[in-house]
Length: 145
Image (tube, rainbow, N blue to C red; front, side, top):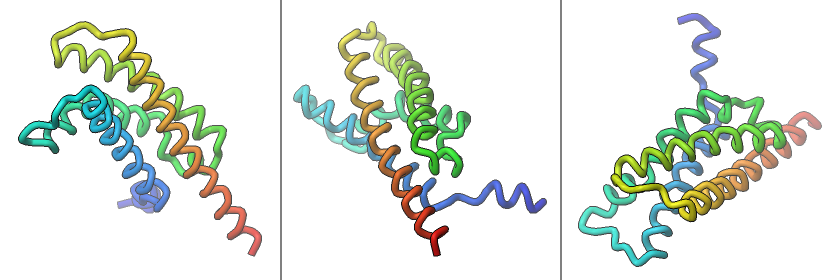
C-alpha cells in the first residue's frame, strides 16, 4: 500500500462522531415520526426503524461521502460544513422521498416532503455545525500551544 493511500483511509475522531450522529438523526426521525402518527414499531422494532430510515439514510451517506461532507477540511470550516451539508441533504433527501414513494407504492405527499426535508435538514445542519465549531475550537486551542 502506498503511503498516500494509507493516509487517505485514516478516519478521524470527528468523522466517526459525524457518522454516528448522522445515523442517530435518521433513527430519531423514524422513531419520532412513527410515534407522532401513532404507528407502532411492531414485533421487529429495529427492522421497522431501519426500513423507515433507510430510504433517506442510504442516499445521505453515499452523497455526503462523495461530496466531501466527511472530509477534515470541510468539518474544520463551519461555513463549508453547512454549505455541503445543505447540498448533500437536499439531493439525498429528494432521492429518499422518491425511493420511499416507490417502496410504499403510493404518491409522495407534499406536506411530508416539506417536513422530511426541513426537519432532517435542520437536524443534520445543526448537528454538523456544532461538531464543526467544536473542531475549530480545539484546533485553535492546540495551535495556540
